[in-house]
Amino acid sequence: MPSPSHTIRARIREFALSLPGAVEEFPWDESAVVKVNKKIFVFLGAEGAEDAAISVKLRDEEAHGHALAVPGAAPTGYGLGRAGWVSVPLGDGGPSVELLCDWVEESYRAIAPKRLVARLDG
Image (cartoon, rainbow, N blue to C red; front, side, top):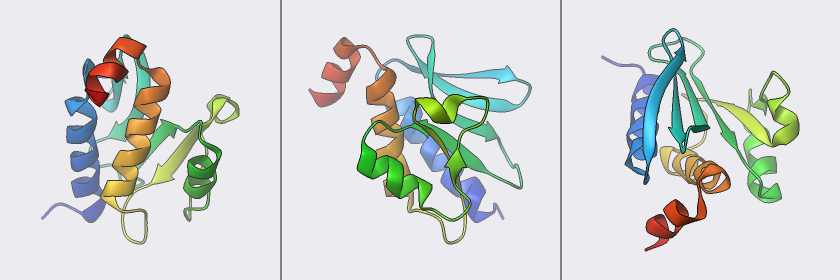
């Protein structure tokens, strides 16, 4: 039986790939990302990883603060945290799938070209 974090990651992946122009790539071995217009909008990590987490870009101060308040959440490494990226752990006691998908959508909106965001809103 898949772990709760595996199920949550699968639902987030499915949602991210449903957004206009979204494609999945594996730039670092088994670690997945979802891109739009050749730019990453969500880091999904490796499927089945014990420390499952996603990283998203949150420009909205309230959403950014809310994400950082999740136990175990932190600014994303490699300097991405300074640009608004937050890494949020998945699993028991974490945010709901719905809230995580809201954050993925906000990250998409921050990265995607206006024409694709317009398709999302249409």
